[in-house]
Length: 209
Image 1 (cartoon, rainbow, N blue to C red):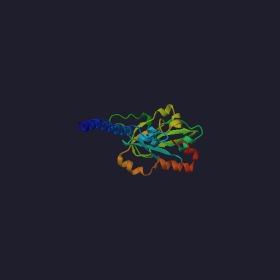
Image 2: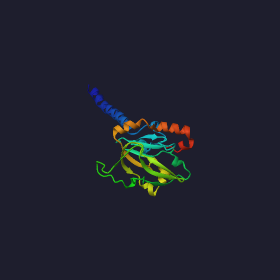
Image 3: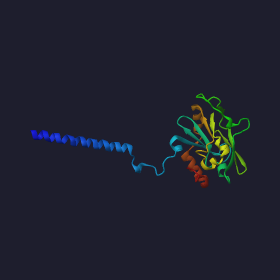
Image 4: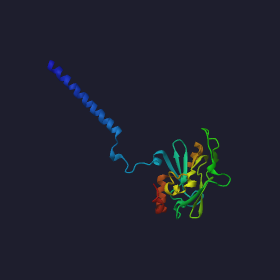
């Protein structure tokens, strides 16, 4: 009987060690991903934080723009890689936020209530972009409040040529949820946009990230 009790005493640490080993393996599986499940190219910040939409031929042929929508409802507006201005010889040379009645670069929005925000329509002009002597008007694309324009483009229009979908964005708009739902289905998803532009122009599609 004493020997049996001794055997039970010896077996208990062994069982505890086995349970700990299983727990360690489960924790490791949670913390360290399987390399076979990882994408070959890590997702960019845009891919991780925004849903990408595209408005093709917006008001004019080849005036393609993107609308990147964040989970909080904010929309980042800019020129899509297939926009005519980005495919002109020499690329974009200047950006002017003075669109007639309003100079968008003078916008000063303050407070949580976004005081002084301009309320724009989808066809409202955000800025004029000059490329190879031709002027193109970038539009709002969605109805909403203009919260910010990227005034760095005034002194550094090259940002549009180098990173139109990141540092070269044009503006940030906050649409009302109801207004967004009305227009959302008129835009293309990133995958549909990529497929369409691949069919239309291989050179434009090659610039897609």
